[in-house]
Structure formats: structure tokens, C-alpha cells
Image 1 (cartoon, rainbow, N blue to C red):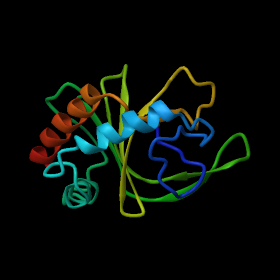
Image 2: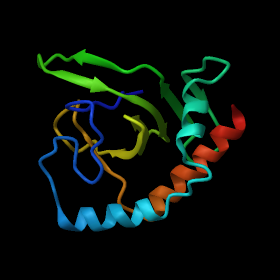
Image 3: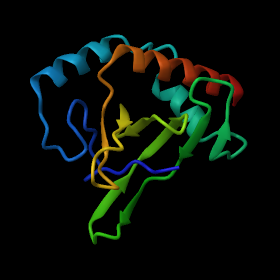
Length: 149
């Protein structure tokens, strides 16, 4: 699975991965998604429970819409092939091989991202979750993962 890369160690919120796209519509849609996050499921305590699970699992398959899960439980700086440094945060990735979603934990803040495979950069290829249906899908998969671990 692909790791999610950031330019620096700060959450992006409604910005794209390059921090260049600062759309007013994205800001409004992102706020709507944030208001609808089920904090009983997607909270820092539960995310840490998955990241630092007892079994030490980094990859697994669950019975859900996005069955493949990858966990990155170490933060690090990465020197890429393009000679740029990128930050790899704590993250939980869900995929069905077509769509890639990431729950990222940076500096005590939750950042939910979707990978955009149409972007040319192999590293900075993600955007914020802007649709409620995507959020509901992630929350349902996270709940299954939480019950599995």
C-alpha cells in the first residue's frame, strides 16, 4: 500500500496536499464533513487503539466495503526519489484497490484524506474528504476495524 506524504508535519484540513488549492467551496464542504464526524467512533483514543494495537499488525483484511487496511504507526521524514523530504504521519489507510482513504493523526488532530490517483505527483496525491457519503463509508469501515482489533 502507498503511504500518505505531507510537505511538513502540520494538518492540512481543507487544503490539498500541496497547500496550493485553498477553495472556498472546499472549506464549506470540509466544515460540513467535520460537523458530521461521529466522535464516538472516530476519536483520538480509538485511532491510537488501532495504530498501536496489541498484535502489532500493520496490514490486514477486514470484512467491509474497503477490505484492505494498512497501518503506519511511526512518524518519519522520507527522502524521496525527487530529492525532496516528505513527512509520513501516523495513519490508517483503507482501500478496495480503486479508492484509497486515509485517517491521519498529526499533532493531536484528525485529518481524513482521499488519494487522487489522477495527480501526477506520486507523493503529494491526496485531497480532503468533502463528501458525507465518503465519511460514512470510512466510519463504517473504521468501526469494523475497531471491532476486529
